[in-house]
Length: 361
Image (cartoon, rainbow, N blue to C red; front, side, top):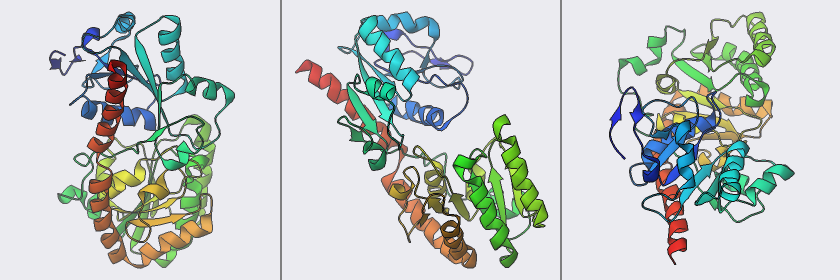
């Protein structure tokens, strides 16, 4: 690999790339966020590059015109690894390997917590290695797999360190903040969070709730109905929709409690980002939330879709800001010891090296 420039990112020769991480979705998603954070960490020890639209300039990546170069063996390995995370990316890998005869092994990371379609199963059976992001997602696979849970960048997500990390800088009322992060839609349980806040906030005047996330066109009516409920309750100044902010990280440090109320989730990074920011979390048991939260030490977990249980779990923290701080401190230790981003990167790189080692033996 050669140098980089802010304008063009890393300049790569295809022959020097041993691992390709395709990202075939232009709109920002959890998968895209994972790739953007993970690839630079992996690149410290493996020659990896991303491929696809909408990726930041500083990310090591290949251009579309370089794809034909993947049909030739890399300079330093017996074959190249194509690490897919979506069906479209698996299919592209299968076409490259089986139709175009590219010297390549295929790896797939599965975060889904549901039974896969016949088509997805067909694709997964053609992978050379499969990764599950949690024990639960692995339970839906019918092939051998390795669990590698996502990590969090503990340099980008960190505890409060300056005045801008205080709740007071927001200009919102109250002394404490409780936040819900993610796209505004039914699947994410935004309505469950709003309903809990409408019931609880009148009893806890020191608290204000914020909702951060994008509203897509198909969910505009859903968001408008939530706002009407808030207005009717007279809480429009204390349950505030902030939309999609340019940098969400300071908000994890400003709030005292993070709520992740998803009804359905693939993995879900929000609790990890909150924990790395020394913030306690109440989450549903969707995704991998239950596997990352130490119940009663770093946060609480409620059954997915159960608004009553969610409200009760939140109430314990609203009653005791000191409990928030204590669990936030424990959460920080837990995130740094159990979920550092380099741990995920090292585990994936070790899997690649096992594939290359098997080829040599």
